Image (cartoon, rainbow, N blue to C red):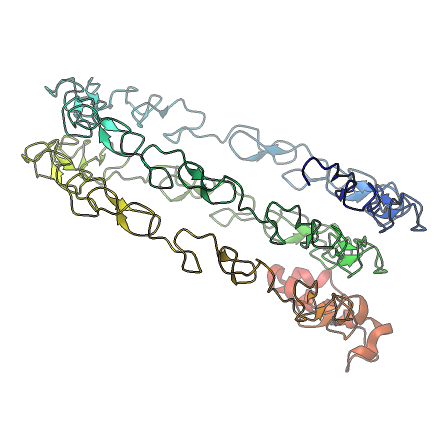
Length: 604
């Protein structure tokens, strides 16, 4: 209403004035109570107010104890508190020693501590000498030290002269030095004039200079008017200028109301405004409870809230122990914890030595360590010379070094001239240089005119220039109206504009209700809304329990919380047997394949 007093209150609702809604009377706390005092506490639980839950009484430490003091220490282990593990007593250095002092040195070797290797005594320079002084110079050559090559004596300029002064100028030409070409004397402007002043203007046209076209005189606004002021507004409509449409007067909110206040809330529902739906009143937690506190924990289980499952109590380490400390080490082996395997004791270098120092060098050869091969002594340049300086030049030729070919002396331009200046221009024609063709003089616009201004417009029509067709005058909306505002809405219906159909009024939810809130839940069932079915109440795990956490493990067995002896009546064939025996046999088989007979000593 013009000069009305209604405004959006602290609850996000348009109230007061003529709305008939008292301000701040639609606020819900986390328990769904209007102006209630319940809130999400430090434990992530909706507590206080009418919940009956005292704030901060559901917090678990890493051992699962309410308000416990256990925490993950510097070793990554849950220690302290009730764990029985002293903090920071499970840390291993790079040699696998608890709280050892060995570390990876500047050479990339695990040294010091109990390794018997002095730090930084295995470093090689680029010539393969331990702690040598040779290095790759500015020419890209390994020089200095024991190489016998003085640094920076193999550099070539763009003309192939050692330490020459020729360089590629602003025109892209190798000039200066011994080339005989003065720098920046081969540049062409967009009209093909050497050092001309013509350039592509804001309209995308080559203008100014010798073109005879004044810059920025061919620009069209979205209505096809030269230098017009019409533009596409926030509603996606070409408005203003000569269109006769006031900007931002065709915007629809999610309910199809022009400049309405309805929007999609945090629950994914179009609410507020004229919808009659209060925002954020259709949200479900992972257990299907409106504004519930259950969530998927670190174990991937829906826990907390009304689930009856304490968060993070179903996690298994790589050895199958709940909240165990075993993990896959740098060797790819499940070690530590209850495995009986010290971490990082099964790693092999490229020569097959445990924790060896051999590695694949720059030549792609396994060298160093126990191989007997000095690193980087098997590299060949493109001429087949060990550590030679020949390389493939800009012409694609192996030159320099021992080849006897000066670099960059076999290049041809598009006209077949060695180091010529002819190139393929914007028209796709080989021009300039010795061709006798001025660059960019063979271009055709979509109407077949040389350097014409006609182009394909937003309607897909060749217009403007010499076509006699004004740009953007052949576009049809989904109702067949030229430049109409009708469009396909979220329901897949052509609505708005001249259709007589209000947008988003033909959508059906999975129960067949227009703009209903029913949806297919995690169980694959159409629930909520008018169905009378609570979401996520028809899901069965592999043991046949509704919302159970049992699943088929890596051994192909249905296991987990609901598959123990107390749940055996859900799994035919398991009565009288402990399902964990199958898991133990599976784990023995997997560890036996990876670690040989050693697994037999740790898995009775």
